[in-house]
Length: 118
Image 1 (cartoon, helix red, strand yellow):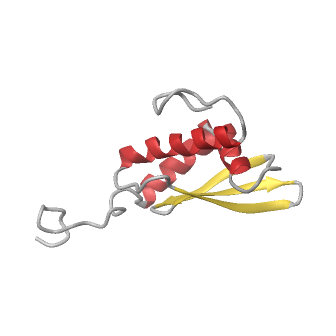
Image 2 (cartoon, helix red, strand yellow):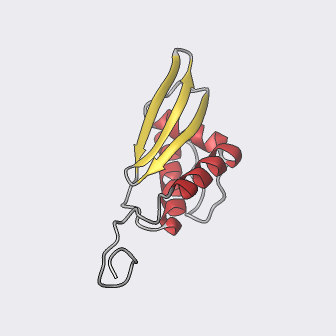
């Protein structure tokens, strides 16, 4: 049956990963529990003077933040290091983005993808 996800019918990679509910859950979690991590990511990816950063959306292309600087708000888009095709990969790739940001900024990087953020 087309569209049901059986082995004969491919589903686009982001069909089940980035549903509106999933995106909202990721966004809410990152903004509530990882505000400092968002800031580190934005400072490393185009907003070095950011004082605040909020994850606005997440999709198959990556993470999009609104970063507040002394000059106003800028949009910072950070592409995924690897394609994300499952919800489980979202966490792994966010951790990779965060660890890369720490390295770019010369901060000590936490150990591995299971290290706590923040």
